[in-house]
Amino acid sequence: MLVGADSGAAALAALVATAPPDAAWWPDAVVLAGLPGHGSRLAADDWAQELDARTHCPVHRETLADDPATRPGMLADALPDTLLDLAYGSTAPVPALLLTGDTDPLADRDALRRLAKSLPVARLAVVRGGHRDVLNDLQHRSVAAEVVGFLEALRAAPPLVPSITVESSAW
Image (cartoon, helix red, strand yellow):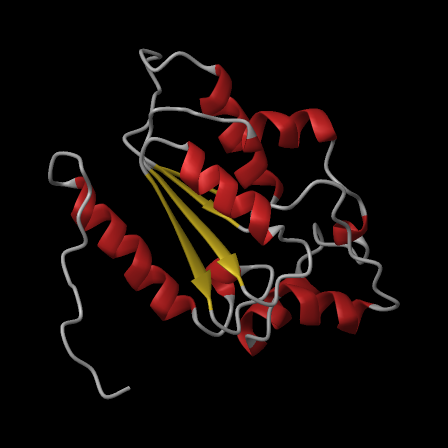
């Protein structure tokens, strides 16, 4: 399985969209977290606003703030349309888990829904209260559980079926 987040998700989606499924590196599945929409960019006035768009997890915020490779304004540049055209135009025959936060300012939920419907085996999971970096936001344990559930479903032959279903709930 290969995992990509943000621009890495776009690059991974474009890669599997254009490579032959018999490639030696072909994955059993992909997880695409925080795939940005066409032309999406964050016009934050300051670093605190950019961090708010990314995550509300205090540990991850501190990690980003202390990382010399992370610079303010990194979310201000939109990805090239050619890359996103490949990613969103994919019909690659690889099982895909698409993850997005419902408060992600760079996500295009309509485009993500269309992508999930166009792929042969795909699931779009929306993280309630999730920001840009759903893998490292406050709900990271729930996101990890979704990824584990996806892996569990992959162990069986397609069609993928979740291991757990809810039959009754009062919440």
